[in-house]
Image (cartoon, rainbow, N blue to C red; front, side, top):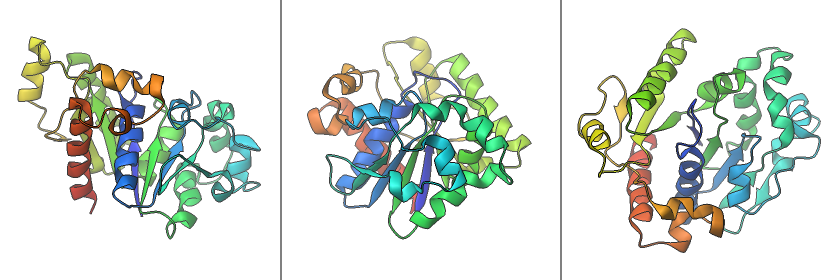
Length: 246
């Protein structure tokens, strides 16, 4: 089982789109795949047409009154399951802080699923928090979508520094350029001259209306626009990530 966290401090940078599309592609290839929507906004749950509700909420999961297995829902796609979001996740930081060894709690919750899934994708909330620390520790790879702008690169540096301060192996951080617009000079310059202190994938996800239309169709891009530039980019991105993971 490989755990992949899709994470960034910033919101609106294509994090959930990446989690949903990469998970779909993994499942489409036959891998047993699970997405855990940890963001109380519930965007991944919305894309998969599943109500963002977990019985007994986040506290039930953390205290063991409800197991992750009990919270798993099937999606419309073979080999692809979801643990939906819940509005109670907004209190997850406070609840984790009350538990012993709170920084490894999410990893402990996921451990019993090792025999059931090949890949687990964590769609993380955009923050620096105890939830972030948990997901960074639990993950085998941390996928960080980064818009090719100066401020987004600064955020990437903050994530690397966050890992170093917590003594988390920052080598697990893998970034790719998201919402890249080749018509913009700065975007083009940064994509052609990526940062050297972190692993940057060769594939960029273009700024494309097909990605935005995921909210209209409530489907991954390869489902409703399989021949689009965005769909092909996600396929290439998954190929790169899968090679690193396996």
